[in-house]
Image (cartoon, rainbow, N blue to C red; front, side):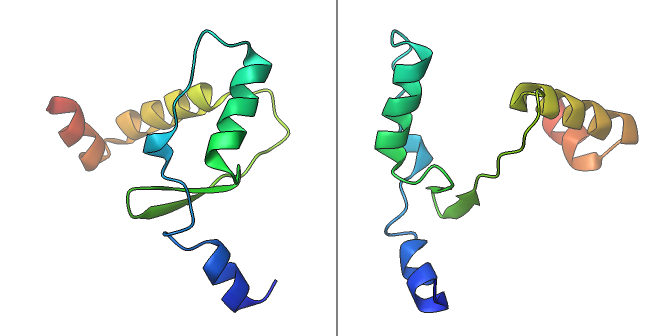
Length: 89
């Protein structure tokens, strides 16, 4: 893919804003996945407001929730100022 084509394909005007995605929790897991892909159009690229997001998948049993918990614990243990500031609010 040429850089020009890639730029057009990944432009903010083309990408779906993740905030517009609706998840119907009454659907089965397979139906929710299908609905998400239909709405997002490109499961690897989307945006959140003006920020372009690339999704990367790995072959692991660890969930994103577990990774986020690990990240938050690490930031807490290291005294990361932005984390402690946001936590206090």
